[in-house]
Image (cartoon, rainbow, N blue to C red; front, side):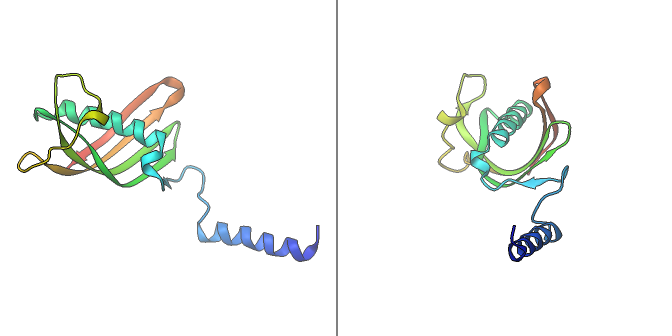
Length: 136
């Protein structure tokens, strides 16, 4: 390989490592396209199921939008998510699909909360663990 080509390539790799653009193994990685990330979607369904089981509300809540999400590889995948959730028109205790549940249109029923949740997935054991869930 030509020496004039090798030097800039080596410099570029060194710069990427030095600036932290390249993530290090075991460190959290920001997820850019959150809504299309299958792992985040699965973690969100799991967390929302837990949230809806814990509340006394008669309506089901679901995610309106994601603010931030990271994934970390630690004996599985650790998902850390910040999302805005809203009350839907679907009632608890009846069969529903989140996709078919519109948000409550008018006050006082159209409530929103910001939720922070951490879900640990161990796919080869088919295990999902809710490490934390806080909505305010």
